[in-house]
Image 1 (cartoon, rainbow, N blue to C red):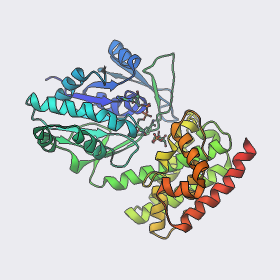
Image 2: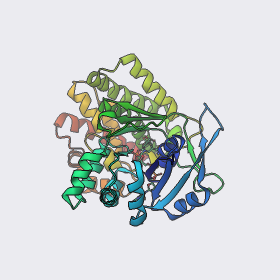
Image 3: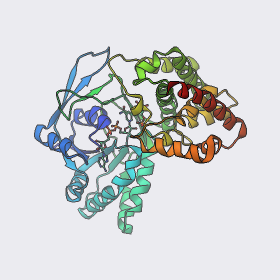
Image 4: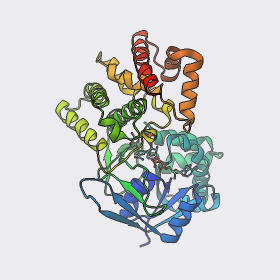
Length: 394
Ligand SMILES: NC(=O)C1=CN([C@@H]2O[C@H](COP(=O)(O)OP(=O)(O)OC[C@H]3O[C@@H](n4cnc5c(N)ncnc54)[C@H](O)[C@@H]3O)[C@@H](O)[C@H]2O)C=CC1
Ligand SMILES: O=P(O)(O)OC[C@H]1O[C@](O)(CO)[C@@H](O)[C@@H]1O
């Protein structure tokens, strides 16, 4: 029997280091779609790549992922053919790129219908964003011209949301563009009720009926703690996450921010408090993995996205407020994001420009959507304290 086909958008860190690896290992004929030619050429020449385990567990081990190929995602003819043949499509391109790939996916869905394919297709966006697959569905639908395509989408195409957790930092090995380094831990949790047709059998993919709880647990703990580390680390002039966490002042704020988000998560989703504390401690250990040198500018990238309502910082702060719980360390993390400056990060320039033009109070209200005086005061107060720290450093 021929192998089933999987198409994965984004042959980057998570694409090669996590989701693509699970798909290929599960036995799919895996096609990566990307815009970077040298990655696609290398995939087509070598048909395999190496994953280096950067961890205390499985230290030094290398996994070879076989049976892979690539296409340029703007080659619509090749994309239509692959989408017509695929049983599953996944993405790890970054939340802002979903809108860009939606047009090509819509064209592929139309081609699939016209080819008479009536097997179900599931499209799973594996991004650090709540409801990423639902967003992708909306964007794809905008590009479907014919009613028959829309009906086809409703009937045959599922867009299950998911939570994706593995730290895959920038990595280089022998100038090999395909080599990727990963922590040993991974967790991919997919929304079961939204799957169309037969459930995909992919070792490493877990299904759940309660995805929101898992997404928020991950985003408001790992990504929250990571973001606080990155922004405070930047302010104190540290280059990497582990350097930043070696500073007891930063480690204390990061830990307390995760405890604040944890208290809110336990109330919201009835998580067991002891178990949740273990989860926090495990994450803090993952941050301190001595084999991963993760730059604070990567972890803090796109600060506007990271301080919008519902994301890793404002999301848990709002949840803590909802239950009348403390949030002062989360507020410090948000304040630090407004002080983040990196000339290579467009959003950091935009955020700083907003603060310069409107003042910190208005900027916080506009970007975070928070309006209550008490909470805005807390962020503005922290901003003032941290600004002093930044000045001392500069
Ligand atoms: N790296 C990590 O540790 C984790 C990342 N994530 C999420 O995974 C997603 C991807 O992150 P990374 O893999 O780190 O980023 P990355 O930058 O390494 O990979 C993204 C890939 O998408 C490609 N791409 C950009 N535009 C494209 C287009 N129009 N068509 C096809 N491919 C396109 C890029 O060329 C790049 O190869 C993000 O949403 C991130 O938040 C989630 C968990 C962990
Ligand atoms: O990929 P984003 O959303 O920009 O944020 C970076 C975060 O994603 C991760 O790469 C993995 O979840 C973390 O290392 C970090 O918290």
